[in-house]
Image (cartoon, rainbow, N blue to C red; front, side, top):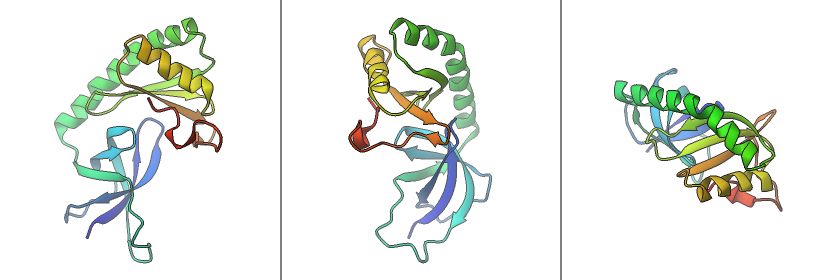
Length: 167
């Protein structure tokens, strides 16, 4: 049986329920590597959650892969520097491409394969336009993550749908 933990991950401080197959108990504040809908990311364990009373079919889509190593932390620090160094370049691209979003933050996944672009905007055509322009201009795998005043903007019915603006 897997354990469940409440974790916080990503620059937006997203909280999620995560499953863990390891029998080792993780303490509050432990740094872990998780597989999220965005890719592989670092996370902080907030607390252990009892599965008692939880329906058996509730399976968190976020999975704790392992405890973070010093190499993971160093890698994330390097990716954070890279993201910070490219922030102005992304602001310029967004202006040149005439995409009506406000760039808030950039974050690389721990494997370095995906750039998350956090924008102050609702999910919709401008997010899609930014993702498509980035792909067309050879910027690699980019996922636009719209933020609202309350955190990551949730998909709305009739909009981009559950696929959101991930490309």
